[in-house]
Structure formats: C-alpha cells, structure tokens
Image (cartoon, rainbow over all chains, first blue to last red; front, side, top):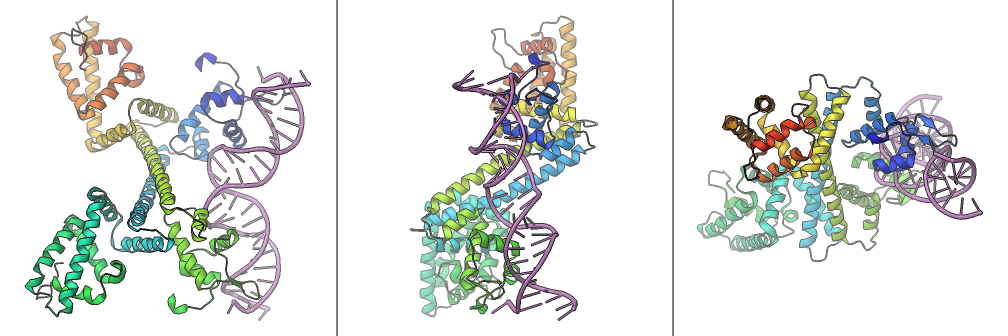
Length: 251
Length: 251
DNA sequence: TTGCTCCTCACGTCACGTGAGGTGGC
DNA sequence: TTGCTCCTCACGTCACGTGAGGTGGC
C-alpha cells in the first residue's frame, strides 16, 4: 500500500484490496462517509491516499460494531467523548449477549423436550414453551443456566433414570395415601430418603435452587408440573410427608 | 381469558391483553400470519377464540427468536422438522453469542487502552485497534478471553506496575548491551529472573500462551509492540539473553 | 357535536445485496 | 467490435414504529 503512494484507486481495485464490495464503497460515498476526491472524465470514482487511509479507519471501527453514523461522527472530528461512546457500545453488546443467552437457554430446553418426546408435535412444543415460561417465573436466569449446565453434565441417561425414580416414588406414595397411611409414618422413610437424594442431585444441594423449586411446587398446578402424574391430593400428602409435627417443612 | 370464550375481540383489546401493539396485529394480518375471522360492519377487525389461541402461540414462538416466516410455516402445519428447525436456530444463536463476545473483547481492550492514555485521541484509538488486530493474529479467541480475564483479576495497578517493571528491565538491558556485556553474562541473571516472573504473571504459566506470545514477539516489529521502547537490536540482544549456548531458547 | 377506536396507506429503520439498463476506456 | 469496469437508479431485507388523513360507533 505505501509503495503505491500517490496512486489513484478505482472502486474495483480498492474493493479487492480491502475485501469490501463495490456496492459498499458506493454506499459510503452516498452517505458522505467516504467521498472520492476525484472523478475521471467518464465519471469513475478515483480514491487518493487520504481516502484509502480513511477507509482503513472505517473498516477498523466497523470491527467493534459501531454504526456508520458513529464512525462518521468520530472521523469528522465532531467532539465525541470516546470513553462515553465505547462505554455505551460495550453496554449494548453486553445486553445483546445476555439476551442471546436467554434465547439459547430456551432453545436447549426445547431441544431436550423434543428429544424426550417420541413424536414431537406442535402441541407438545407449545406445552414445553409454557413450561419454560413457568420456570422463568420461579427461577432467575442464572439459576436456569445452572440447571441447564447440570443437565448437560449429568447426561440424558441419568435424567431419564431420575424421571423413572420420581415415577416410582409417586406410585409408592400414592399407594400409601390410598391405604390411609399417616404421611409421617416410618413406612415412608425409604421414600423420603430417595426424594432427598433426587432433590440433591437436581439442585446440587444449593439452597436457593431448593427455595425456587419449592415455590414453584407449592404454587403451580401439580398435574401440569408432572404431566398428570401428581394431582393436588397427592401433592398435599407429599408435602405433609416432609412437614415436621410443628409445621416446619424440610422437603 | 377462558371466561371470555365466544367473545369477539377488537384489535385494541387484544393488543392490551397480549402486550402487543395494534400495529403489530395489523402487521400479522397483512402477512397472513393472523387474520381475524370477521370484520364488523364498519370494517373493524374481530378476533375469535381460535385467533386468540393462535396469537398466544405466535407470541410463544417469537420468544425463541423464530422469524415470522418460520412461525407461519410451523403453525400452518407445513411439514416442518422440529428438531432440524430448532437445531438450526440454536446454531444461529450460538454464532451470535460467539460474535458478540469477540466484539465485547475488542471493546474492553479499547476501553483499557483509552483509560491508560492520558488524553485519548482518534489516532491512539486506531493504534489500539491495530494492536488488537495484531493480537488476534497470534492468539486464539479463547486465549484472548483468558488474557482479558487475567487483566481484570489482576487489576489496573498491577498492570501499570508490570509495565514499569518492563521499562526498568529494558533500560538495564540496554545499558548492558551498550556496554558490550555478553548477553549470557551472569550480570544479567537478576534481569532474567525478573523477566521470568513477569512472563509467568502475564501468561499464568500456561505454555500455549507463552508460545503465542513468543510467536508475536519474534515476528512483529518490537517498536510497535513496545511503543518504541525496544528496537530490533535490543530485541535480538534480549532473545540471546535467554538462548542457551546450544541454540535452544527458553525465554 | 365530541371523543374514542378503528381504518388504510406509506415512509423510515440499518447496511448494504442484487439486478436493470446504460455508457465509456484511470 | 468485444470485454471489462464503471455509472446511476431502485427495489428488497426484518418486524414493525410513526405519522397522515379519514371514517364510523363491536
């Protein structure tokens, strides 16, 4: 480039040299962002060294996501506060990342939902999305990401095994409930043990996760939560299984 | 909502109920995505229960970033492969996140550059951006993120101290070079020690980082790298400081 | 008659991509 | 004359926002 000092560049040459398209250079010309200093007799754009340098700056500034407007303001020397400009740009990118991560989490949840259904349908998809919305009411974004990571670490097998575990537990509990067993009866001790184990595996023993999960479990319709496996009677019985005689709850 | 079964909704009502704008509903109507089943005598759009349900689905699917086109294809029951659709959507979001993180890293580097300059100017900004481009040639994205995190953990003070450290070292080395000292001389042992300490602090002792740094140091113009502090003579002398007599280099 | 809700255009956004139709030789 | 480079419109993108100007009573 410096060897060609003094040369005039045609659009095509300049486009090839910078990896831009001719159309892009036309666009910058029309915007007034990069106007060639000369035209040939036939009207061809001729760019001088100054414009080439300016173009390299434009390209550099584009690489941090600045708008052409902002770039023009910077290069035209209007008093732009650099710290302020880049600070706001950084904030904007941070917001983008946050938003994209929310989308990503929802999408992985859907993917997992599609996988676990035999024949995925739109109705099931909508159910999954409603479940996602519900989870987002009780868990923070951070907690949801931790849940997702845990699912990935644990693997599909273990998740399926855990679901079978819950099914077994609720079947047993329902049997005892129907038989009229007192929910605090020692016969349910082994169930309580298994529940504690599964919960620990799901929440990683983190108390804030436990709290969010309990909130959801207490407020939402259990049939929705468990795909019909647990009704309100069973849910209430289950809660009493973990309630100490003084009314405390440690489930 | 279910209490209002059978009701016809005007756009305004529906907009308020869903948090959308009237314009959005007009837009969906024009696209054919959500067409009200009736019009009043005066031409008012009247939405029935089916359309309301459809709208809730549209809103749900929008929440994972699907285009209105994709949503229409899904809801109109054209045979869309759900796993494929959401797989591609996930890939797209992943690419977005990756790209945004690259931008973010560049922006933090610029922010740090602006902070360390007394009066930031556009020229200094462009210098910083060129430095960023140079680093991106030698380090992987992952390495650059690790460098950035290290900078954050270490703090501005320590970075400034490290820079002063390098300045002192190079001043000393230049003195010995000018005095004709052999680069392997034991007088330079304390310098070598300090260099090893600073390098360990910068790279965290990770060998891949060391390799990338050496590549850059060996190939790029040292004056650019050190803002004029080190010229080629001094760089070569410095390299010989760490080269064993058999030609190996452990710097 | 006055509000209020609704209606249909239609331009603008952001940074170009993609032709169409034509001239001229940096 | 044939290519090749260049030129100037001008529409399209994506999901609406924002008026303008007007009618009608879900």
